[in-house]
Length: 188
Image (tube, rainbow, N blue to C red):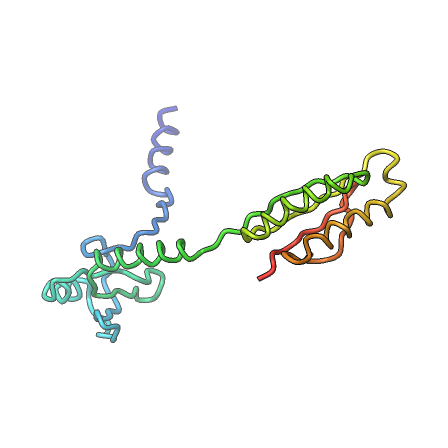
């Protein structure tokens, strides 16, 4: 029993897969013997030992950063790592700011809906379309209503006609099970 336990500990210490980190290796963390080194401007300085590269980075008061660990030999760049991380975070923040999220609002109808109710639902859809949201219109059929799909199609076409000034359907109304569905995109 003791023998198996010691094998398990040996397995955990030697054969365990290291966790993959998104962080880059910098300065003393780089353990490779030979490296392809790039200057801070991006020009190649050639293949050299990690000590030489580290000394060169230290002389310029910059960091040695491993940017491509899987290459043969690994590629390192001399740069200000703190400034690099700051610029990356700014770019990501700017990309998130410029990103527009599109939400899909859902409106449910029935084949026997009255004109005033249909207009109210259409006005809600128009509000959503003005905000820039997509609208999913779902017309539900229950029981005997399934035998009168033509009535449901008329209701759906009336709804589309009311909101056509603010949005247009991506495709013709289609059936999904017992529901007739159409997605309306806002007009640009």
